[in-house]
Image 1: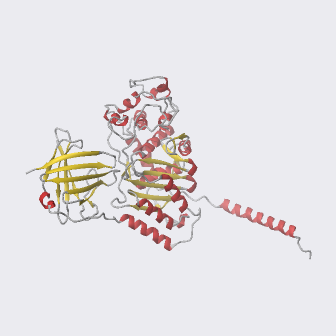
Image 2: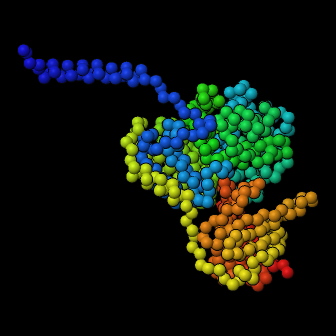
Image 3: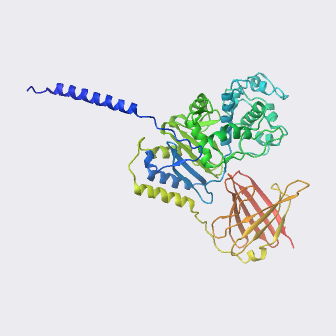
Length: 519
């Protein structure tokens, strides 16, 4: 029997490997494509390891996010929730103020207009679509402004929007009797498409365009053509303006689960349960982000992107986020109440998620890592008390007393604090400037043990408050309406029968109020 030479043996081995690989490839090709789990009714929950992710690294991510003023974080891979945490006092199921994530939803509704043929092209000149408005400051640049330039924040309209002071363009827009016309009336600062400038008037006009083409407000159109199809049931979106237009730049509330449904639609290129809801090209443009924006981000179709990280996202003030990572088959959601000078880096968030991905295939179960993740989720839901240092005698003197306030920008008329061993509470009355109902009363519980006390649900939401004495004469009250991207603080310094109040909130508002105790 002849012995095989090394070369012959190597050739035979290579042929054998090729034949085996071909057989394996045929076997893989014969396997059916896994069915996409559509979360129209509810999301499927899975362990991270079943979806190729590391539970211990997700536990660390949840702990890192918890170091900031976040309300929630959720990670979805392969259509399944692998981790979600709700940071006390916020709890699951409460619709959250999305701020500028609203803009990305308005983009999605504009895409539906295109899909249905209600809008012929994003290249349509804007002024042609609003021929009924006598627009001011019309020049060649304004005539060249298109729907696409509104979507890309490159409209060229002169605009100021930074600190939200009363003289800024956006604040003057809200005071205008016709907000859409106000935006269109602004002079041009440059040629459309030439440069990026973040302008919340752009999506306001797009919302007005939805009303013009459909006869419905953006909210009603969304309920009919988007929210219903995706199984979104938590939506709230304020009131319409004098022209019946929904605020297109902010004001939408969704629960984290419903936020994720928006991201999941984009992850699947605009398809939901086999139906093309928005054009796939719309999603591709948002993902590509051709427009160089600020702080290293790119932009397109009212979505932000970091192309070098394979990520695109809807972002809102105070850390609202819908993140899509197509190559990893991941959607992530985050909500919060961060101030403008605080932020949780989107880039870091992406990196932390990416590092937790270990495989496209299931990993072996890891009980210790899973226990770490479960503990991190429990810790997030357990409020960590702030320091307290007792209650002075002054509390007894002012408890239940009403303090009348002088004229102020908050329209606050009076307040009272009630210090009890249990169910301590606060009451604020405000002026409504309505002859039929001159004042409105707000009340709730407050925790004096360093933790928030939640009040029963009110029409405007669930109050959560906590208070503590800073010294013998100064009381500090922290108030939240859960799901609103705002924290209010009231610092009340008492001096005999008088009080000085310093009010601040996470939107940057600061006011000083003065009042006296009533007999």
